[in-house]
Amino acid sequence: MWRRVASLSSSISSSFLAQTASRLNTWESLTTGIAQQAKGVIAPKEKTPFITFVLGGPGSGKGTQCIKIVETFGFAHLSAGDLLRREIASKSADGAMILNTIKEGKIVPSQVTVKLIQKEMELSDNHKFLIDGFPRTEENRVSFERIIGVEPNVVLFFDCPEEEMVKRVLNRNEGRVDDNLETIKKRLTVFQALSLPVINYYSEKGKLYTIKAIGTEDEIFEQVRPIFAAFETVG
Ligand SMILES: Nc1ncnc2c1ncn2[C@@H]1O[C@H](COP(=O)(O)OP(=O)(O)O)[C@@H](O)[C@H]1O
Ligand SMILES: O=c1ccn([C@@H]2O[C@H](COP(=O)(O)OP(=O)(O)O)[C@@H](O)[C@H]2O)c(=O)[nH]1
Ligand SMILES: [Mg+2]
Image 1 (tube, rainbow, N blue to C red):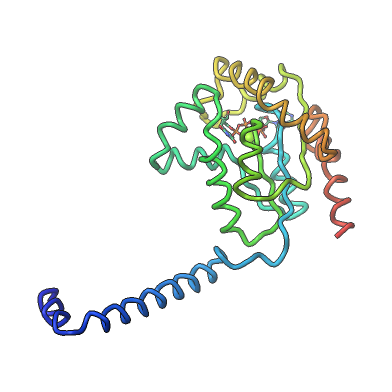
Image 2 (image 1 turned 45 degrees about the vertical axis):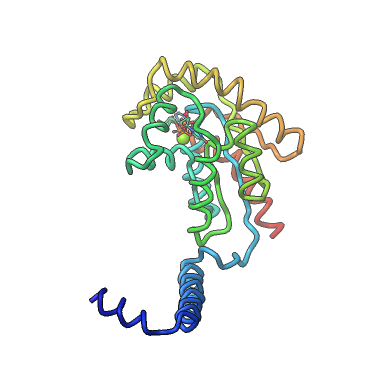
């Protein structure tokens, strides 16, 4: 079949072919655009995004409280750690590098994490996002602002004593490669050295809400609730 088409095309003038090819290209980009718009990939979102960063050390209760915030205030929950673990599970090109980084308690290169977050944001119908466990470094923060082009509206900091965080992580029981004493110590050092500067940055910008992350899950949520309730009434 390809031979017949090839011999036919040789008898058609090259300018006709060029015009047809150009029309086809235009159509292809149009239809791709329509398909992407239908999936919400390109179409501008109707509402400006409302972004909350959820920060705190390992085991401070970020994920637990995010579930409650989603239930009560209807946010989309994007856990950076979960997105990275999904990459490992899908055996993507970056999977092995991400696994080693997580095992070492270190931070995955910003571009990798920001791209995963960006993809999830684009695919979501929601405009309210809880970004859990990110940014963990100043470089993460700058990279998000540069690639996504927006700043968070709210930054939550779950402030929890180290010994409580260690106890919780060791009891977490999710089979995670980083929930062991050796990796937890490294993660706590990384948190102090690299993540606290991000928290201080948002404190200076007046965007930080510090939650005392000890007590029952419900007690802690009663500190979180009024923060979002205030934004709901504003609009
Ligand atoms: N207020 C709390 N008191 C006791 N344990 C908690 C509390 N909040 C969460 N946990 C437990 O601690 C562990 C770590 O919580 P998680 O939400 O995964 O923290 P993070 O996402 O900050 O690492 C989980 O096993 C969770 O069930
Ligand atoms: O933006 C991120 C978020 C997570 N991680 C890695 O993923 C691990 C687990 O992150 P997660 O937020 O799931 O841990 P948590 O704080 O909830 O225990 C971290 O220690 C890092 O190694 C990362 O590199 N960049
Ligand atoms: Mg978590």
